[in-house]
Image (tube, rainbow, N blue to C red; front, side, top):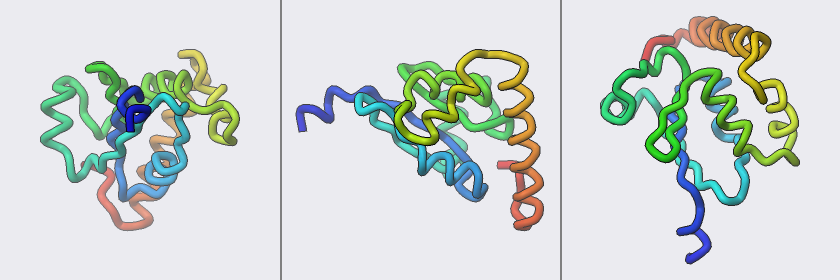
Length: 127
């Protein structure tokens, strides 16, 4: 258990009701030195507002690492530095390697697609 205490802690708040968010969170494979905690944003709204006072979960998922909060495409850019590059997801993360116009547009498209899917599933896209 000594090895587990050396792992860096990372928390990901996401919408568990969204199929895309849920799949992404469950398949995220971080480097071995990270311990990820997945939290459903719908069940942890008060915790999010305490930890990240200036962020609204409805603007995208939130990653917390070393008392820093990252949201949306900035969270994806951060996760790119932590993801295991040998996995399929890790190989796809190269898209978000830099904060560029392509990653911002792609993130916005995924964000809109999330709202459409939740509407089709008759779930509220607002948390």
